[in-house]
Length: 306
Image (tube, rainbow, N blue to C red; front, side, top):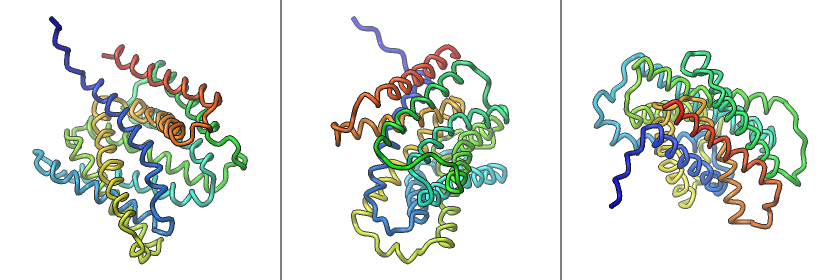
């Protein structure tokens, strides 16, 4: 006779959700590459966030207290500004730096989230978390360099890299602001409500930037396949991923949540192995092992903390 299994703890569910988050984010990069290159990227991101917000509206509006207070609305606007800052910096820097440089700088997000969270009192210094962040950063860098083997170009730090690093700070600040607002009970306890309002504010801010900076008339060139891909990105790669991140932030620290960014290049490696197995070699092994060890240390840290 088998015993009934114990229900998973909130922390365990958060970690499982973040694993799904990493997979969805990793799968979204090939989808983005299929969208027409002439379409305005900031406006596409605004539409993508708008689709995500509308998808969550039906769930959020049935939650008690889903209308934010003045304090909460201001905080949601700051969170939306973080999203706008990151995606705006990413699209601006994409034409002024290399993908390797951006991948290398993006590795800094979990450590930045930890430091910012420590500064505002939502993180506690823990050697296991610091060790996991170090291992994950090293592994993610190794995977980025393995993917860049054979490509031309040297590392440099110019205006493109500087702007993207500011975007990385914005990305790191998003879960920190969420945790800070939750601790003060300014934000809703519902992950759907928090995701709805932050993405909605982000959609407005990115959309305003797109109208001012981009040729919005090119949206008329969107094809049916572009629209289908944009719908997929809005539902799966925005609504679901940010909801998973918001749900995890309620029970985990910002540094732990953002550490799952290290799994994204690992997912990209798996996709590369499926599509072009001849490109996979021993150079991918060290980074893969370090990333998996880092996630293992994170899981161990949560069990010890519980």
